[in-house]
Image 1 (cartoon, rainbow, N blue to C red):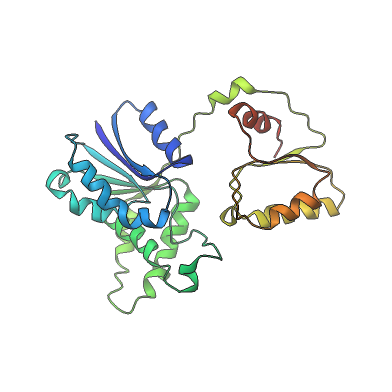
Image 2 (cartoon, rainbow, N blue to C red; image 1 turned 90 degrees about the vertical axis):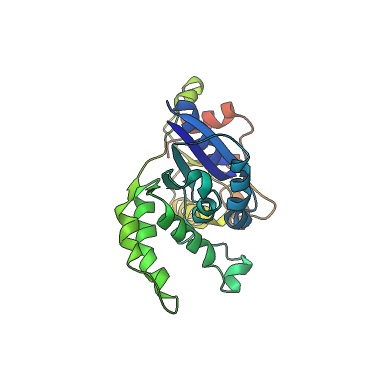
Amino acid sequence: MKILLIEPFYTGSHQQWADGLAKHSQHDFQLLTLPGKYWKWRMHGAAVTLANQFLETDFQPDLILATDMLDLSVFLALTRKRLADVPSVLYFHENQLTYPWSPEDADVKLQRDRHYAYINYTSALAADAVAFNSQYHFDSFLNALPGFLKVFPDYKNEETIKSIRQKSQVLYLGLDLGRLDHFKTERKNDPPLILWNHRWEYDKNPDLFFKTLFELKEEGIDFELAVLGESYPRQPEIFNKAKNILSKNIRQFGYAESEAAYAKWLWQSAI
């Protein structure tokens, strides 16, 4: 089968998912991508750009597999002369209906933050099948849709939620973890090493993580800590606070510069 995989946000975990799927599948994949930045503009404009790029190729797929960062309905409309009879699958890595917004985002303050969720909604309507990367994600999106549609003044189309649910399923991410085996080391269990390996941003809820560790420290429970993940010039203040309060517990505080170093911390961590 020939599959057109469309990823407007081709970086990080999105890129690894797309590359891994193409590498390990028996099917013939053609990737159609844009760099992973300007996420709001990708959701608005990527469909037009990628539709034009596709129309310049001679690749004729048997299936379209697009991620939630694409306005699928616009892409299908612009490519209908080539793709009208080709089924499409929408894969949700995340969704803009229940994804936490940054407290500093201007769109939230201006109360104009619903459009990105609406793109997810219409894309799910346009797709022939919808897949979510976890049961939690499946439930959170579909359970939030009724309340989301009710805020609009009329013609709310709440009956469409049933059709989305009927064509939706959970499809877990494929993970190639065998490459980490080469770096395996023995783990010491006393004291246990707790690992953070996420981006240093609000949406990963670092406040809950670190405040939990503050409580453990106050209770006299011994542990060690490795804080990995990408950091940015603007990051939640809790990271600086944690670096001071947990200074005696910290074994690593910052990005692991190599795969070997990263794998070492994964193997050594207990939690």
